[in-house]
Image (cartoon, rainbow, N blue to C red; front, side):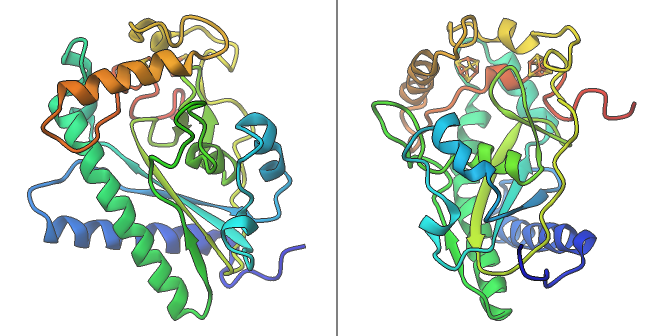
Length: 267
Ligand code: SF4
Ligand code: SF4
């Protein structure tokens, strides 16, 4: 059993949200005019959660365990930076290629995630604990397109949401946004996971809007064709060749019922 949390259960997530928001706001002040995000979310997983072992089947045998990243790991912190609605609207309306703003926000959000990780690591160090961070992206096997640390799967374990038909994590603030995570020796209470599917189709309803939005053959078949998806991401990188690497697409996450909120959130 994990040792007693340094915060009461309800307090840990709010503390983390405050720290992520503080890092985000400082970054925005220092880097105008970039402002692509809504209020952040955060969740915590117990580093000993048996679901981490199952990621070796669900993601790949090389998926790391929290203690591979930090031998003293007790908790895994995951945060989500939801995008503003206009970003999704612009990407939805942009046609075949990713919108310019969508590509730019990807580059910029990678920097923000790095800054948030640094801020959280410093906050953790001041409290007398250790932290281990991983890159926001581009840490995957380029042949198999599998990451040794999947932020979205770790986000699921940390109770941030459930997977949609589009293989993205649907959070309370939807799926349009970016996840970051870090491992710490700080004992924190784990966040409860949702007790039902938040994707309408997976919950037994009818939707499939994301499948319709994917014009590139990645979601039309089962299993997910990750190579078809990545080829479109690389076409977008070539389309926005003047930007740093922008291997993104995101059409399946824009203009769908789970873009900015979880379906049925008000029910
Ligand atoms: S668009 Fe509909 S089917 Fe696709 S993930 Fe969202 S809720 Fe599920
Ligand atoms: S990111 Fe693009 S290519 Fe990949 S599944 Fe979504 S819509 Fe299809």
